[in-house]
Image (spheres, rainbow, N blue to C red):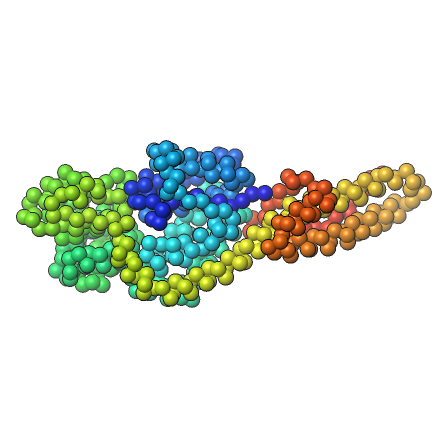
Length: 446
């Protein structure tokens, strides 16, 4: 039998210093998927990497061996020993994997409960795995169902109302630290989805002076124009830092953009005017040692906790409604997954009955010299019909056993002497279990 397995880390289990070492931007994620595809233990795989989590969703034959293999790969990716990584890693199997992904996609496991970005991030992760060719029946079913659940949560609850993104919470943090933002000069580094949400949140707070810088000038210009700001090149970053009150950075750079020496040089000309650096990137854009400079305050995604807890209290009732939807949806997945578990046993049982019919027909071949070919076919049809009738009831009972399914499968295998490894039947690409056919009629050739 194959099993679903997720192994990963998130803001709940590991600090940003660990998560940034495991971050897999799009190109690296694709290469990592291709690497997983080469491993015989990994049958299907999807990589989900965001600023708050990095998770591997896989289908494996031996979950214990696969978990050890994946932990080794993650440790190598992070450049540390597996023993150093293990405390921040979690792993789940089968229905627990589905429940976890449903909650992730519904933003119930997010740093900011109700945040909108995660649905698109999960969808892009799934589509990337589809493009590489590492998905299959189980992951296809899992991710499609999770995305449908996330959509239902956002449609049927008000969980996303109000401040519902890391960016908006970051702006709230800036307001908590500095008071009104109306006359503050804000520099945004980056022009992706997070930067766009940041600009929108700043606009809502009445910030009039926003400057955007990005390695792709056209994207920065589009963003600045939407919110009445202006753009500068990366070369002008030092002079803009000298003017800024708040810097919010969210690029996909693999290394820090603002180092201690650069920020220290800027602070010398600011005449004790404080600077707030909010780093929303993973890996981090701001060298954490900048926090040791006089007049500089650095906040990363892990520092948003206090502000996030305030939002969570407001969303408590909606989160409870969303959890109920997740549990309702997980029941359907559990039934589907359970139906896959019985297929190998049912297939082995049917083959057992087929072999008995074949043996009986072959053993009596010499007694039927006077039978016509048509009569031989009739005898075979009756024999197979009897076997089908006898096996029908135990087949239905084991499929409908619910929580007792595993016990009944074991009894069935022991009673009929079925081999444990017989016919590990897989679901079809549609994600639905194949129907078990009756014993086929076989046309005898003499």
